[in-house]
Amino acid sequence: MLLLIDGNPIVHRSFHAIPQTIKTSKGELTNATLGFTNSVLSLIEHFKPESIACAFDTSKKTFRHERYEEYKATRVEAPQGLYDQLPRIFSILKALNIATITAPGYEADDIIGTLVDMAEKAKLRGVIIVSGDNDFIQLVSPLTSFYSISRGLQKAVTFTPEKVKETSQLSPEQWIDYKALRGDPSDNLIGIPGIGEKTAKELLLKWHDLDGIYTHIEELKPQTKKKLIENKESAILTKELVTIHRQVPLDVTLKDLAYQEPNNVEMYNLCTELEFRKLAERFENSALF
Image 1 (spheres, rainbow, N blue to C red):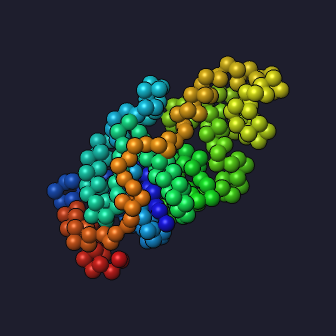
Image 2: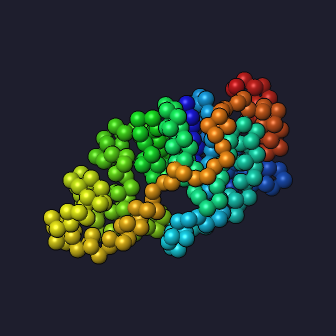
Image 3: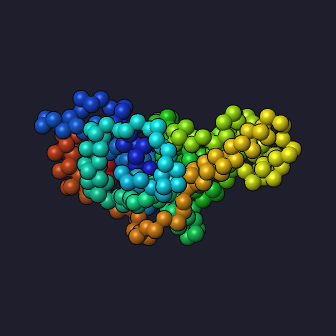
């Protein structure tokens, strides 16, 4: 089983969920590092993966920004205290022997999409994506599941093709067309203003995808037709930008993601330095592994 973790959402959730009073005696802020470490350990305990990777966005703009300058423009910049903890988080992942992957010009979504593509071409069954971003629904297939932690690890939901259909009436392949119609405010993508969830689903259930809807544009209600015609370029752009790329040039193979035992000594030293006493004890005793 291959476990693919979208690192950024877990870091952000940990930073905002755990008090910023969590610091070392020297004053180093460690709340995100502590939360992230506990979350990753919980995921390993739960899934017991044979292979694992953790993908991160970079600070550089991506091809999506080049295509649309306003992409994610409405997002509030994360506090510096969060960014300052990333080196520690990467050190933790290294000590856990978890492959950490970034790709300038691409998002973590695209890295994971590429790894999913590699795994499915190899007929690897049991790929699980962990994230709070529902864009990953588009990658769900008979071989790949999406473990959504949008409401936290304790309330995680596993999306299979059947679960996607049950909860949304749509297939995973239709998710990008749904987003094209509805837009995505979190990424500052407009879609088609005035098209609600009900209408979007009705259109897709009848005509399958965006191309099918525009092919039958003359058969739509006047108001819906007007909205679709006036905002066609926006819908096409939104679909393009929400589509996860699956051909990112990565210098890794599936064999590189094979999960090894953590470096318990290094984890103990890191946890001791960060003053994570309970975690340090676990790695000192090596009982967890």
